[in-house]
Image (cartoon, rainbow, N blue to C red; front, side, top):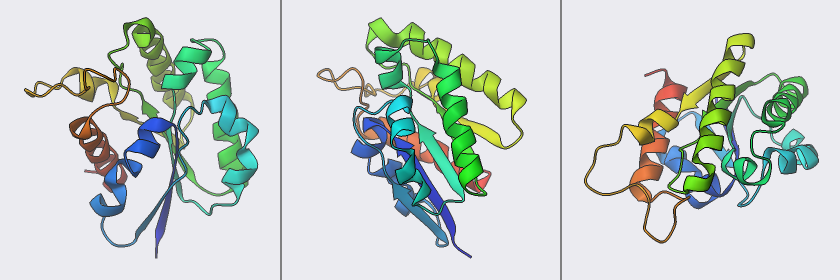
Length: 175
């Protein structure tokens, strides 16, 4: 039986080709990436009818960088809860949130850190909710090549996208 995964994200998802999950996961997984550059959680809430059209067993929610820039920490938890409740009510599926890499843009790092803590706390109260820990993966990276190009402090290079794809793969496969 096929396991259907849908990535709902922003430019990190869109520009990474779904974090390479179509090739990282074994047969039996179908990955659909509907990420849109510039989208926030609010944008997806306004376009949630589009989400209803995609049969999904596992939703990967990779959102937060644009939210940090547009809304700061205000309403981050309530918007997430609204999106999660919609996804859980429209289909029998599981939701996987993502803590977001802190980026090299210093003006939003602390906001992202606070919003990531909100995601971690949300899991404690929702049995069907889980998250993938990207913040600590990026923060503990010790490779010689920086994860962000000098020209772009928000979008990681291919190494960063590979780290994200591997983290999602491990979580999905229970590794």
